[in-house]
Picture 1 (cartoon, helix red, strand yellow):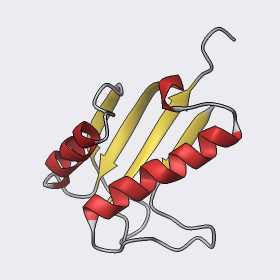
Picture 2 (picture 1 turned 180 degrees about the vertical axis):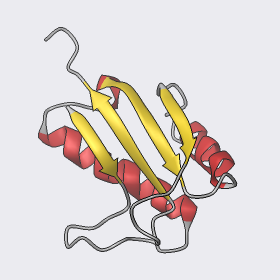
Picture 3 (picture 1 turned 30 degrees about the vertical axis):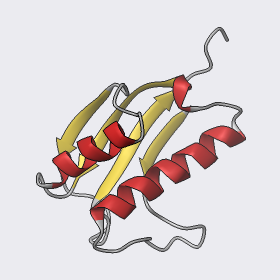
Amino acid sequence: MFLSGTASIDAQGETFHVGNIDKQIHETFNVISTLIQDANMDMQCWMEGVVFFKNPAYVQEYLDAIEQNERAALPVILCVADICRDDLLFEIDGVFAKKGE
């Protein structure tokens, strides 16, 4: 499963937590968890990914957040780049696979 541009966006397409990087990070992982559960997967199925930050200052907040939530082992590339919406500070592309299938 490939998740592209997963971010802090609600079911109506609106950005959650405008201006708050910590809450956008947490909401993004909530969105990912919901999407992969629908495919009968969990975060143990994470294979690789790219994490995008609008500002390099957000990298440390991401590192702190994943450490607190035991997600530090996720293999990702960290990238400071333009993100598709002005109000999004953070987004993730991720590849998931069921082990043994």
